[in-house]
Length: 249
Image (tube, rainbow, N blue to C red):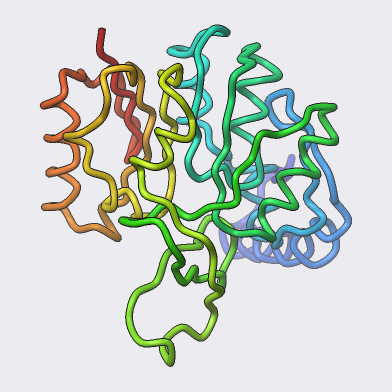
């Protein structure tokens, strides 16, 4: 935000801040339809003003990006669950040189944005339009908010006002489909990590970058997930907010 270069009273400064924020969201942000973030070109035209502002000014996927940069190597084989608009996948492939990369994204509309972003960066995604769940089949996905607010819903159909039906897949099926060469998991699925039995992670998975959502899961489930990951021989290589990097030999 532009700062005033001359002394002003607090009330005037607050008025200026409020005016600039309203002006920025009403007249400036709507005209910004693309950007380059951390070397990755992104199409913003189908994103809300809130999301555009987050990408342009606040910081978007900063913790995950830094962990990928610090812990992943070009010869890693990655399965990303919760690919969103494709930023992390593009960063890993374009900037880190990772060639074996599979993205899983539940929302078909978000998949189309992801594909557009890959096109902007002259890459072709290996993307599976699937929602992680406890079993293979069909689930209801709430798509009422921004893409990072999508989540699998439960309960009677009458309560699923903003939901669509999507294909679901279990973690075991995903890992089988990805193949035994996969050694990295990147997971950000808005609470659906509770569907994963982390005590059964196969030995070929040696790196795990995950955002855990205690506000959705509750602290007991959150600690249970971390405990199960550690029981598989992982160590916490880094913790930033709710994002963790786990490594094992």
